Length: 266
Image 1 (cartoon, rainbow, N blue to C red):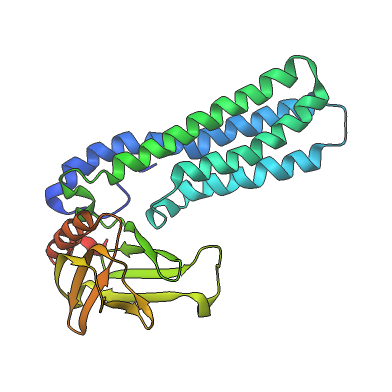
Image 2: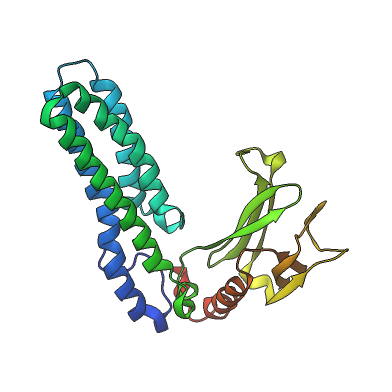
């Protein structure tokens, strides 16, 4: 991987993110590439010993997830998918473990114990490494993530009637969406919105409550509690995120830094 961060960093924060990247990049390689090589090797050993027609099923369970996880890092998808890195490794690792355990059980003997154990340890270590890499890069200490082109994302609190969603800030715009949990890819079920950073005039934390709550979309009121009011040239948008003060602070800093010197155009 590149010795320098593969994302734009404001000049005042380049030293900080050079240090963070030195820690995070090896962890990403371990979690998404090295661990996958170990899991595939464990499957291959088990298949070589097993004398049964389980090859196709085992390969189907192990190889596609391994290819996806390696692609996730090598194609730098982590730059646009800033969450759930550890969940990806752990969840797909459970699927892969089934693909290792099946031929291992057929092979019997030492292989039945060693190959699944090796895969389990690798997947557990990869999950921890992926989580650690994300925590290092996105640690909000000093509002550092706002000084990069990395997307910043927060969960929205549940909106009536049981809508879930998130807010994402990149270096060009602020985006938000809401949808019923479990409904994906249905445009009619989605509430979406965005505003270019250049059109944002201010950010503040507000308390929402009582009758007359602001609407995030037609018929969708903002739930009571702390929220972030984003002033724009077209009006004000109120976003009820889980951590309103942090969003307000990071978004305000990103707004101030984004227009300085064109560094974010990288």
